[in-house]
Length: 150
Image 1 (cartoon, rainbow, N blue to C red):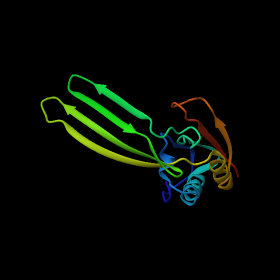
Image 2 (cartoon, helix red, strand yellow):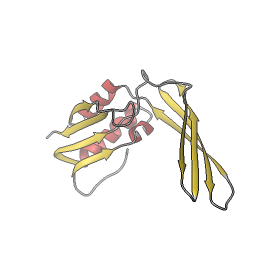
Image 3 (cartoon, helix red, strand yellow):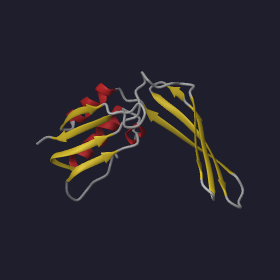
């Protein structure tokens, strides 16, 4: 997100599923917003689904998700942790395929809980007119919609 380039600007750029939270600082977010602006035509849209804010993040909360089919069972478990402005999610996966051994995998994610005013300011500085849609798209998530000016 920080260094990508496109051959020509597009009508819309989508950044969903909290991907933006992998940028762990305002500087990285500024670089990314600048790349998004360069890749979006004037009047085009950028849609960013941010991660939750630190105000609603629940440290110590356990989560478990499961999936079952005839050939595969999956389990993903995590207890939310925090390091300053960052959510730390150490996911543990159990993968149980038919006629094979159970696998245990770990996936550590560190996500920046960027304050909403910071995200708005950064995208406005990059040339977008911004608004928030509080449509509860994904649990406690919102959506930043920016229209490219110019």
